Image (cartoon, rainbow, N blue to C red; front, side, top):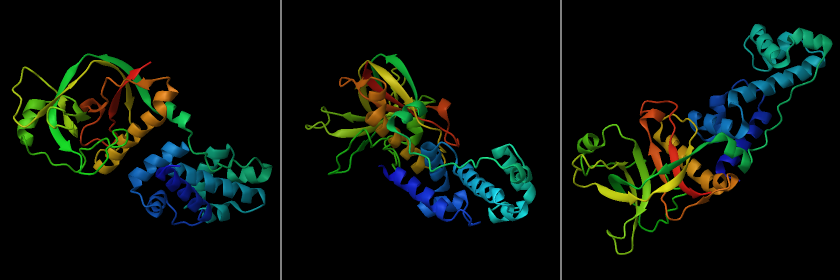
Length: 300
């Protein structure tokens, strides 16, 4: 079980224990679980199939329905289960059950109880990702390089988005921007045997090289061979929070290699190289629902 799954189970248990507590809001639940609200909301929907707010509301309506069936007053149920007014309770209850609380109390009906959702299976994840196949000829990436910290065993399947918390100065950001223009940014782990006797692993963040432009001094170039790529896309994530955005990229890397390739009858092509693509068309730096693509060379 992943750490995220453990957090969600902890949150679900907390809901059951404090369902009647008016202070239990989606924001309070995220704080209890030790996550920012935007991150918690994202992983809750990923694992449970609905938003945390929807789940709380459904659980409280189910508890109210059970009490109405036992003869409780509509107003008492509304206040007990966290609804500010009987009118608001009536609207929410009617949407959930197709009957007003009073009609439900009179005629009775099934209690729609959202059970603790089963955590998504590995196969279910496949339906949540967008995959396409692209034949891409050999190309070059020119960009900044980042060395892996000494003693750290980097696994590209989990250590994506290595740009997080990095500062690039050689060449200057202005020189790089003039060369990169509006081209997609690419992140890739690369072995440079020509730079180090042992072929040290570097993370390269750059753009597809443009031979028509003069390349600024300080950029490194990786030559990526032609390949057939399976292209996966992250769930939309708020780019204002770089840490959450980077974690979404890393989570997708992990899922691809843990389940996605096998679920789609694919295996990695060892002659190719996988990389991340940060495209303006998928959300700019001020976007609250940006996505990232991960391109993996495959053999069908």
